Image 1 (cartoon, rainbow, N blue to C red):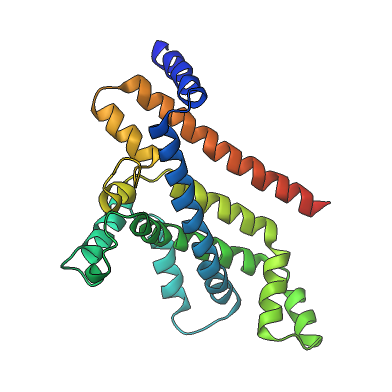
Image 2 (spheres, rainbow, N blue to C red):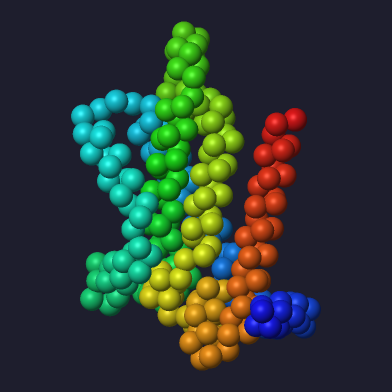
Length: 231
């Protein structure tokens, strides 16, 4: 119990004292996870709509593949991304390895299946009469897409929160393609791994509490938005 108590006290001290390494890790974590989520939403929402709205040959196979990717370990994604971004890889010429962009790419691969799968589920759950009404009013494909996503907005917000939770807490991708470089690609999760690996368990717990606070603040903001939209 003393470890958690000491960890909580140290977390307060690290935040109050303005520790550079801690705030750098927090900034990197928020930056890469936010960009990853945003891009995942931009790509995943339309794809999820198509998967949930249309019936096409091989749909079951595609849905099975997407659902399987939900359980893909982050270290496997990190390994694939590392192979492709390394100098001998397909995208090695761009020099992305050990940069924040590399982490974002890997995290998009992690978050995209979550957005697609949950969006498809929400679209399938929308009242079919909505589609009939929209078609009867002469709505085009874009209008049907936007209207459906608007109708399913609360479920989609849950999908976004789920994806963000998975992205912000991952460690395999950030460690393998980011390199855990201090003040550059070190995230809170990789900092926790580093500190606990050195035997600094109290610091690791403190950083864990900091990560919890970051996730909590994001969820509070999303909950406030959800409450505002229901008014």
